[in-house]
Amino acid sequence: MFQNQPVSFSGVQPSGNLTIGNYLGAIRNFSHFSENYKCFYCVVDEHAITVRQVPAELRRRTYETLALYMACGLDPEKNTLYVQSQVPAHAELGWILNCFTMFGELSRMTQFKDKSAKHADNINAGLFTYPVLMAADILLYQTDVVPVGIDQKQHVEICRDIATRFNQLYPDTFTIPEPVIPKSGMKIMSLAEPTKKMSKSDENTNAVVYILDDRDTIIRKFKRAVTDSGTEVRYAEGKDGINNLMTIYASFTGKTFEEIEREFEGKGYGDFKLAVGEVCADALAPVQDTFKRYISDKAMLEAQMKKGAQEASYYANRTLSKVQKKLGFVQVRG
Ligand code: TRP
Image 1 (cartoon, protein in one colour):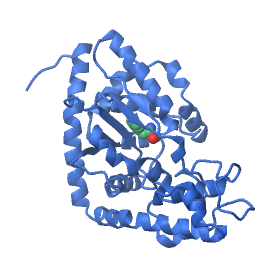
Image 2 (cartoon, rainbow, N blue to C red; image 1 turned 135 degrees about the vertical axis):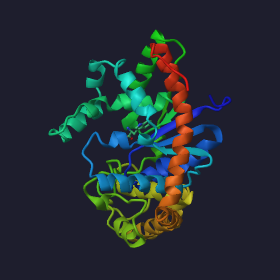
Image 3 (cartoon, rainbow, N blue to C red; image 1 turned 180 degrees about the horizontal axis):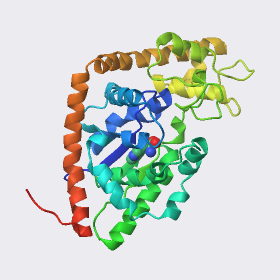
Image 4 (cartoon, rainbow, N blue to C red; image 1 turned 30 degrees about the horizontal axis):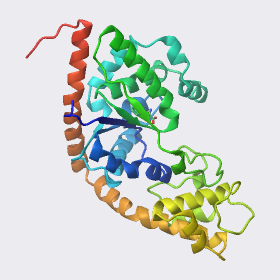
């Protein structure tokens, strides 16, 4: 579809609370993707309503997510950034794919099982068919690769199963996408429980550093980070807290673990924690400044959304009408 350029598609929940884990493990590297791929980044507000949302907050977070992605270096001239509900083809293909997805295979999705346990009072059909809408997102763009966290791998697999099934009935409809899971080396752990991944939904906000945390908060959180009873800044098995801080420091500075060990020789954990907080705050400061500028310019953000939705619709509608034609829907022109 794009003159031999492979397509990358990723969806992001409209939550402004992105963490340094999201930043270091994913977003920071997204801008390089556009050198080799035609990239789509979609703010998935339709997925968000599978759990109850406060409308004003959903609206605010939709703007914030777009502004934050742009502030992290995603150039809207090189990438297609848009909002899912502004491209109706997602919901339309989602419905069609529902008819090619089995009840049994959706019942096996671990995220559905987890979320229905967590929201026992609202196990709605949208929560159940969430992966089908996600499959529509991906398949509309004839996507080759889907960069996602490991927790979303099962959803990309069901997307492949749906696409393969559809292609067997109606050949050459969809490209079969591959998940691309970031290397675990970049996994950033919780500051409170360093054996657990840093998660934006962690109830203990001291365990998580958000991209938009101010300098004092960042430094305070790193000062309180859980470490072991040792004193030496050294990467070693069992020193999960220190290993995590070293990973963070290495990611922000580009230094190797050996260089870090040398730098902090003879110094204690306190000095090291402060240094990690400082490099993190320094690195995020320009992102935060840019974010503030973007978020206060609603007209610019809306113009970007409109441009993104137009671009995305062009490609999405091509796939949608191909599907409709294959199914036997009557198409009238003009
Ligand atoms: N389910 C994904 C998540 O929670 C978000 C998402 C929606 C997505 N549609 C997508 C990710 C398509 C990749 C491709 O993180």
